[in-house]
Image (tube, rainbow, N blue to C red; front, side, top):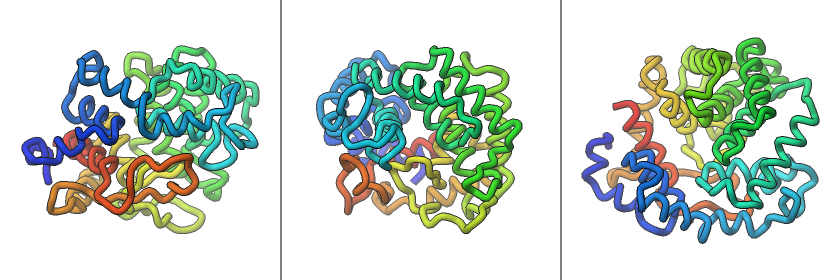
Length: 307
C-alpha cells in the first residue's frame, strides 16, 4: 500500500481509534500533520497520561527518579529508569509530569558525574533523544552529551567495543534517533556533521540485508518489524529515523529497503509486527496476535516521507 492509498482507506481511522492514545497522537501529528496546539492533539496528549501504557509504567515509579526493583539506572533491562524514559519518549508522554522530570534530572546528574571514558552511541543516542523529547534539551550538560555523541561518530567512526571494536549500525542508528530529537535550529555544526556521517555510514551497506560490520552475525530481529526496541535497531527503526532526518532519498539502499517494507504490507493495508521484549517490560504496549498499530503507523510514516 502506498501512502496516498492509505489516506483513503480504513487504515487511518483504525489508527485513530481510542484504544492506543500514543498511536493516535503520532497518527495525528506525523501522518496527518496536525499542529501541536490543535484541539484533538491536546486532548490526546492528556489521554496518554490518563490511561494506557504510560499509566502502567508510572505505576511502578518508586521515588527520587527511580523505578521499582532497579539496581541502577540501566539495570534491570527493561524496567529501570533509562529504559522507562526511552519508552515514555516513544509514547509521547508529558515530560512536565513531576515523576518523569525528576527521573530526567537524575539521569542528567548521574551520567554527567560519571564522565564516561567510553561513549556508547546506543546509550548516549537514547539518552540525548529522550532528554530532548521530554523537555530537558536546554540543559548545558545535555549539550555536552550531544557533543560527546557527535565525537563518537566523527572521530570514533561509530565503533563499539561490544561489537568487536567495529563500527556499529545499531549505535549509529540510535545516535541518529537522538540527534533527530534535537530541534534543527538548535543543532550545532558538530551535530550536523555527525548526522551526515551517520547517514553516510548506514548508506554504505545493504540496509535490507543488514550486512553491516559485526563481530558475530546479523541479529535475528533485523527484519522482523519490532516495537519497541531498546538499544537495538532494525530496518523499520532505521527507516523511521531517516524519515525524521529527511534522509530517505539520499542512498539507493534506503529506497530498496522502503520497497521491501511496502511489500510487507498485508492485503488489508496493515503490517504485522513483533514485540520481542514484552515479557521484560512493565506492560505491553499493545495486544499481541493481531496486526500492529505501532508498526503500521511507522511504516506509513516512512512511505509518506519517501513519496
